[in-house]
Length: 154
Ligand SMILES: [Cu+2]
Image (cartoon, rainbow, N blue to C red; front, side, top):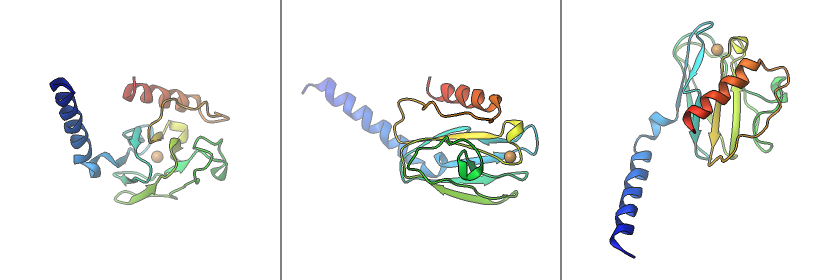
């Protein structure tokens, strides 16, 4: 092993330490807006299996609802994953979601789905976005999720 190896190892360790330094910040999704401006921030979030995600409602009335037949939508979460639905959340409320299965989870907000209020969580290392069914989900949402994912993982 040469000195170059040790330097790159040190750099890698430094990066991973930075990445774990602020777990509470990286696992929060803010829920914002009241109508056309309704949105999740960030739209696309990457976490590790078993991480807990905190949805913090800043304004408006929203839900955090999995694209899953249990919620009368096509399934856009991993096969082994459990469907979720926060129910109605109001400003100031916080809702927690723990995801154990690796893969891609698409979710939406019931009151604002038609206005494009949706998000995506990547759990673990995701090399490819699955070709999930779209059904009657607004095309604008499918496009928005694709676009936002490409922004984060070009
Ligand atoms: Cu909403």
